[in-house]
Amino acid sequence: MTSPSRAIRADAARNQDAILAAAMEVFRDLGADAPLDEIPRRAGVGRATLYRRFPTREHLFAAILRSQVDALVEAAEIRMAAADPWQALLEWTSAYEDIGAQYRGMNTRIGTALLEDGSPIGELCTPMKTAFDVLFRRAQELARVRLDISSADVLAIISALPRDPDTGRARSTHLTVVLDGLRPATEAAAPNG
Image (cartoon, rainbow, N blue to C red):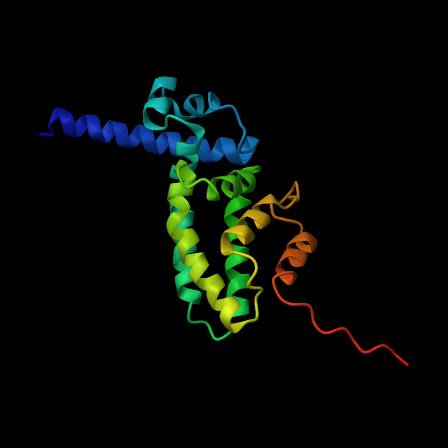
């Protein structure tokens, strides 16, 4: 027979799963600034259950993003020994873009949180920032990436780029300009005389 405490924990786990599933749906449908009251309605739980589990929007985002952040850490670690550190950097930034693009407005929130280590998202992203920093420093060392910019600056800039309203991704021309700006300009062609 199941003890009452186990039944409560199982029920709480089901509620949490329902809240997270509903939150992902709401943020996908309505964007990162969606009204939080819509989440418990779709999850079939009370508002108190939502706020007991996730006291702020940031706590909810951190729970939603946990697996994606873990995937970004792994993606950076896999690419740390890549033969082409520049290509590794480009591939990682593309994966970073994919995660932020899942929910309209999420990129901006992630970019802001990356600069605030005390926020729930900032704390969640610390291992990702560390892994990306190693990847970025390797590109600085081996792929002639500029030394006057930090990996945190790059993440903040990418997160702040204008987004395509349909895909949520940074417009390719804007992202290309940012990434191209990480490398020294090629020497200008000699003027024709």
